[in-house]
Length: 292
Ligand SMILES: Cc1cc2nc3c(=O)[nH]c(=O)nc-3n(C[C@H](O)[C@H](O)[C@H](O)COP(=O)(O)OP(=O)(O)OC[C@H]3O[C@@H](n4cnc5c(N)ncnc54)[C@H](O)[C@@H]3O)c2cc1C
Ligand code: FES
View 1 (cartoon, rainbow, N blue to C red):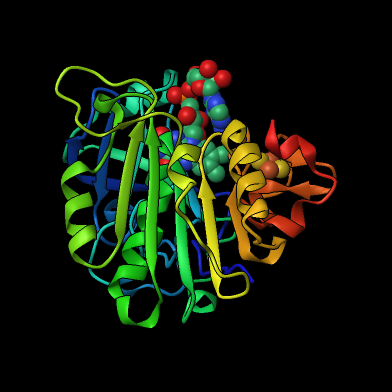
View 2: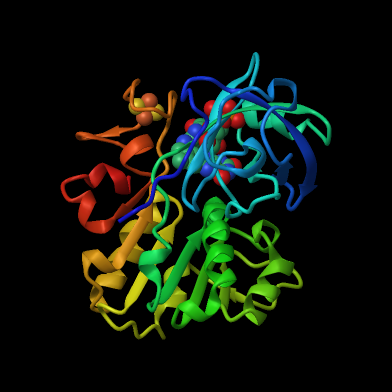
């Protein structure tokens, strides 16, 4: 079962949060660290759970991140909750709002609502082998799950990350990847198109799946990436014998409210902002739209 966690008390009320640091990690992605605890300027905002008034969240969950005059966008947590440590968000420059967010620096304020949605049930993964398959910006939410699992490395079986990006320039967290390997995560990276100096694999993330020999029932596969990737990755995992209960996905849909009111994220009777974004494959029966 996916997990839910505590949140800012009013789900509709954004609170101001100070940016502690911003790191440019590629031409189009920035890693924001937000100050620990919400809203220095509105410290009486009532929040449940976290130390110092910070919200508690799980890998897989997201915040609605906003700026007055620009709107709001769902952005996944990029690192697991840790008392005393700020919220990390990896934001890709995509359009109007994310462009404005990329112009912000340390000391500036952005606005948050959340956390929303279902997270990964890391407790339920204990004792199992885990295959993490990430595509593109999917590595951002995946990182929060990886870091949570690596923190308790001994509680899990074999851990393997297969990560595909469009080009070497778009591979994120390169230096960290080495630390993850040292911590016990076997990692393979592939790019759609190589460039000068790239010595790694070239192809699609499915090309990395050949040597996998998962044991059904004692392996979980977690897939986060663009919908087109899901169809091929899931088909391959199933051919390897994994069942629907062995496979979890995080869906990325257009969202507006984040709280099950506007219908923007709806697929059939499911509101991805509330029932997801993390789903077991079995929960997506009859929801073919999820893969488009
Ligand atoms: C649950 C969830 C988690 C997300 N986590 C992250 C994250 O961790 N980091 C990150 O950089 N982005 C994440 N996104 C995507 C992010 O929300 C969008 O890139 C953002 O809304 C773009 O806002 P904008 O105003 O800058 O761009 P817009 O001007 O609204 O759009 C710019 C371009 O991006 C496309 N676009 C906008 N929203 C989406 C979407 N939801 N899915 C696919 N294409 C979209 C538009 O079609 C357009 O081509 C997440 C989305 C969801 C639903
Ligand atoms: S984003 Fe409004 S219902 Fe999900």
